[in-house]
Image (cartoon, rainbow, N blue to C red):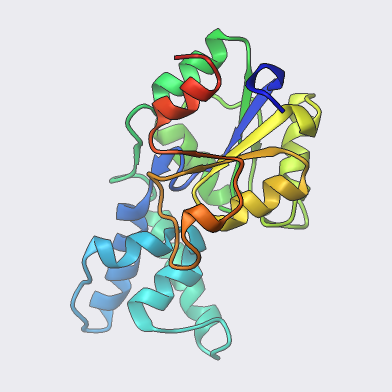
Length: 221
């Protein structure tokens, strides 16, 4: 698929459109303080933001989903995060310009995130993102990424064929989901990237270092 055949651009949320690491880390650190532990630096949490509560709790407490207390601590984390969703969260530099360019070119765009709707909706609103044509959350369909179902649902809502969409994300699961949905995939270097395989090994069709790189590929810059 060439850039000329793209009719819609779908984005991951955390680590792609917004930098939510400070608020997620703050929620985990409040849990540490409650237990008499020192706060950890933001950079300890940042690589694992894409893993959500599981990643934050792993860094903060070394706990895994297999442990008996994980479910209760996850709910505590959710409550902490929901209490202050966006005080420190910002849109990445250049993203507003990207979305404006897409709209000016007549391209549809949407957001597909594994973040639950109770968190994603207020974050999108409070960070001032332009209204996406579709917002598909982690609990919108029966499956979350890397399953293709959320991406296919977003394409359906935008009324664009999956093969005419590209999916942009900062995690291996984004690339896996996009490929499974029959979309071309873009991996972004400015995101969280995780602690697994390096970005060059994810199998994305395109790697971009900054938002302008995406616009250049789309011939919009």
